[in-house]
Length: 381
Picture 1: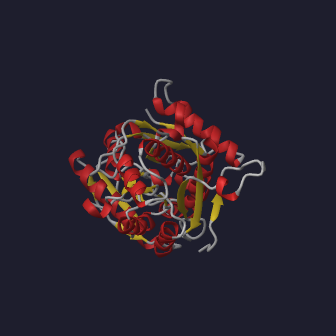
Picture 2: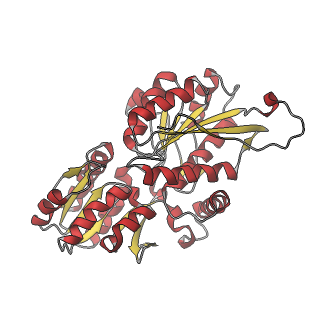
Picture 3: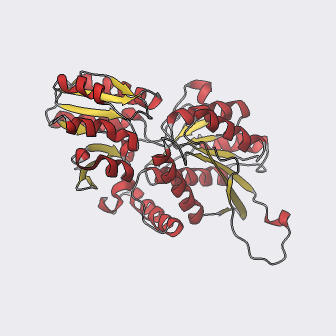
């Protein structure tokens, strides 16, 4: 864990202004995983928030201060970081973190302290448990239905599953079960492994012995490449599928030839230049790319940094509507109420619509299917 936060604030010229005059009016807490097994996702998330700050750093004449903490891929640390940001730094909102378990840990603190959380990991809690959070990554059932449609068109009758032994692995498996049956596809396995494991040989041997027509994983980042590498080593020739949590350059690098031809759902931002001009997300996605390159010195090549950018857009939109004085409990309530009533906000991944009782804000417009072709993601019609 890094005990000293990174603080990004709008630079001001030295015109003799006092420290109090330079203080940020809005405070945004950002938690990500810059170290540990989820860092292959957490580092892109950080680059995305830097792009967001470069895109817009003031609102309604007020400066925005961004305070960042590393949770080292540990949910307990994520929760402690959230408490520090709320109790000591007095943030108005938290954006984070890189993994579903960490996001759920932050959600508990957010609920207790009545602080809005914009989750950039795929995590959701029912009812009052999740009343102070919204989730930007597209829900697993929405994305899985697009994958199953492609499976059905390809004649897949049986599919093997392997996923993480955590909330994300559960979400994907449940979504697969609900979509596959009505499509006439039988799920023949439910193998699991931990994000920190170095081998999945045993699990893959069980899957290969079942001879499924296809294999899909409920994984993410570089650890998500393990099953595909093991399948290739054992000569598996069936179709391979994944989920949107795999759209990451480190996954492509580690997976190499074993992930060529992989089909996965993702947000439109990944193939923005391949979208028609009429798609409203194309324009925002291109603005994101420009801001990302300005902040990081290179163009984006992942799906995760764009979620951080969309979280910033969501905060800006809600803060422009919320009444009250930033830094107060009353303002946090107003900001939460504004977030959960967001309507038709165009982002890079989706056109967001939230309701007080709905944690996710995406619909069919937020998904496309892509194929990995010579290391590049190509839009599948």
